[in-house]
Length: 461
Image (cartoon, rainbow, N blue to C red; front, top):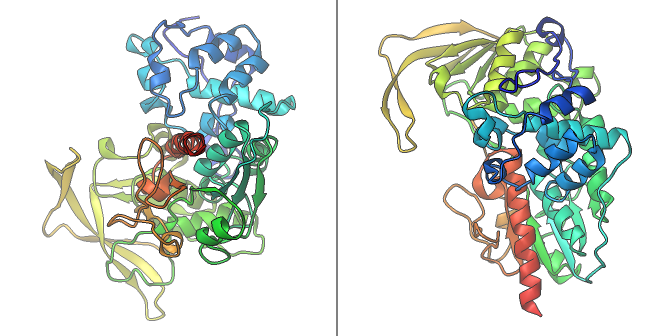
């Protein structure tokens, strides 16, 4: 085996998977995982750990995989991550742990994410769950939101002996993991539900259909229900739009609504909720959510175009997701931007007017700003438009909580080091604080807040 090249991983054939919602990547076999783990150099100064937002001891778990001690590998991962089967599938490892891998300097980085997925899947298939021996400390903490930030914070606090209850607004637990990421990337029943059960096995209680700010407020949780501290991990579910003519037409969706209908409500199985099965769909945006929406629409039978105002090098989506979308037949219309959504006399979408762009000078973030090319407008006929332009936090929680400060973007203000908000004993993290980001960054924020809450109680004594 060439140690410079990673062990290839099996995937569904693109032509086949474009017609189903089964998982694209099939995962490593035991033999493949052991072979890939053998490529790890077990560095004395492992930079990969520094690239992981939840600081998994990556060389240690990989060495256990190499030695075929998969249960020990899972134990090591579980000390840092509450959602390894999720992270192994959806984390941008190429820009985090694998991006720091020394093996990747002269060859291909070790497939850390695929090994994490293998270990987590092996543990699930063999009935292995995380556990805690910590005695109960008598302190009661509420966690708002059962997405990656909330599940991580709750799991870490439970390991420390806290009595933790998660409050989830929807009828299913998992947050963005169940409503935002398609089945073909993250199976709900097989993976997400199992990860949630692992958190519950630590003693965490979960109450669904509770909308904080409407069913009950944070102040009421603390003053009437006896919760001594609160963590807000409610995410960012408020979609953004462009403000162009025609955006109110029938056939225009936010990616959030489109994916929620398909993922959480199983619309792709023709169950009780309808979903647009357009013949020609335009997705506006270039991030991971745009790729998810486009690939979902493709599987529902549409010809799908992604319209993005920058070039391919500037696409914010993971390279793997872009590659998969192209393999499956999604058409990329790059350096182009919508200026109007066209409709008929019944306000139904009939097309979208586009203007071509070119890249000008870099903006504040260092990305080259797109500039319109005068006179370059043209039309694309379509019957569905999906806007995937990012999301913001819903203001319901912050507007119903006394003493909680938000910034000009509507995000909750919280200390980066502890997650503490401007309200005493209330902490926040993830997309509710940063705006839309990644699953693993939300998990990192949940871990930070759990430490902050623990320190709060220690200092309070």
